Length: 485
Ligand code: NDP
Image 1 (spheres, rainbow, N blue to C red):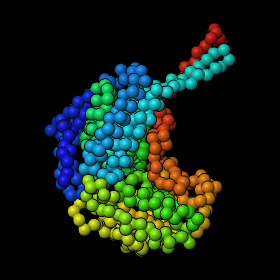
Image 2 (cartoon, helix red, strand yellow; image 1 turned 90 degrees about the horizontal axis):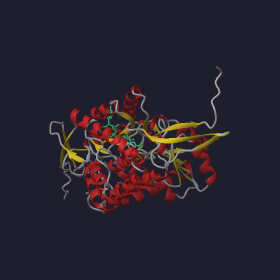
Image 3 (spheres, helix red, strand yellow; image 1 turned 90 degrees about the vertical axis):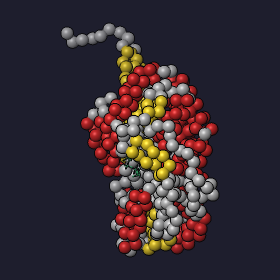
Image 4 (cartoon, protein in one colour; image 1 turned 135 degrees about the horizontal axis):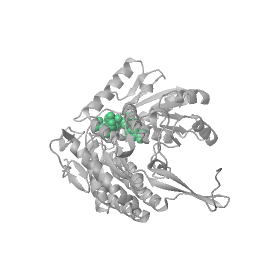
């Protein structure tokens, strides 16, 4: 039984829901059944302009709001999200199809953690003092102005919070565009922020397809863009932002290595591989989808992995017993099944899964391929579905070179009991976010982001402040001024 998740209106601008039925229809379906659960509209150009105007108009007052007050509002919003976690998780499950068992612990709560973390950051935001002989200097961290956030569909409310929390803490305003596939939870976030005391116009949401995102990025009122999305979209958004010389944060795709040495705790390594390939049905940018297992361990690893996959409970995501849900859309399911078929044709050994599940909705079985080689599409392209590729390796030097032989560089994981080796391997891997003996943990105080084609800039942690402020340096003379004439 689905719940009523139809929002009051499609957009949220200047502190209130806004509708414009002239916008292209945006139909939200429950991925577990294909049932329509909400009707919205994409933003028309006047709606986009209204959101940008609201964010621009709110800018000066929000920037001048005492930091402690900004922090208190963000903290209240975090508390409200935690109180309403169940309802927000139900919305997120309808939108994405992810099991409630997951959304209850990983989505809105992660957003609340970011808001609470940056509430503290807001209160401690400071520049530096310097001395130059008798003269002094200081720096100010100033807000950038109107920021645009554009989100992907896999973690809608988490992405909205990870962008809004640092932006707002630093005194910026924001216009956020969710993925058109998952438009619901950002609206709930906007209304919670307003209830927490955020002034009208500081956080606005507009819906739409890529062209709405493009219109936001190009607008001269916009000072900064933060995108979570695919590499091709990243290239387009980066190019558009470059025209206005706007700074960007890019959280893009990945094809990350998860390396298991033969001395690893096997159960922990398999848990890491399961989390890093099948959680959210594999729709996680940082997933460790190239699982490199040291040669002597491969058979035991696969045998035990298959046993552990007996624990998969595929079913209605709203049932809290379900731990494996559908993909977000029919198109995504078709895309993933295409990768699987081409993987079989290329000679990879299908160990388990490999097909659409025999039930309604966009379910693909958890799929494991062994004997995958580096040149196969399975090992090269981001699939964004429940498809694990197991590759065998012999030596440390070999696995490091093979792990780095990719355009991506979002994440990496190493499982071994030898901590010296673990740190040596991680030091040699070209990736932005790494884990030793675990996978995909992303607390709010942990900088998250990629290198190479996976993007740049970091979300979360104190370092995010650098991406949402500009530095003003002030030199203060104490004596007279010498001039040559
Ligand atoms: P897309 O790149 O298709 O879309 C991302 C967002 O950008 C959407 O809101 C999209 O709108 C919008 N968009 C599309 N074209 C433009 C444009 N020209 N200008 C401005 N905005 C535009 O990604 P998906 O939604 O398919 O998400 C999956 C991808 O996101 C994967 O590659 C995944 O790895 C990556 N991702 C990265 C994360 C990270 O932190 N590194 C985390 C999560 C996902 P619309 O959807 O309406 O077209």
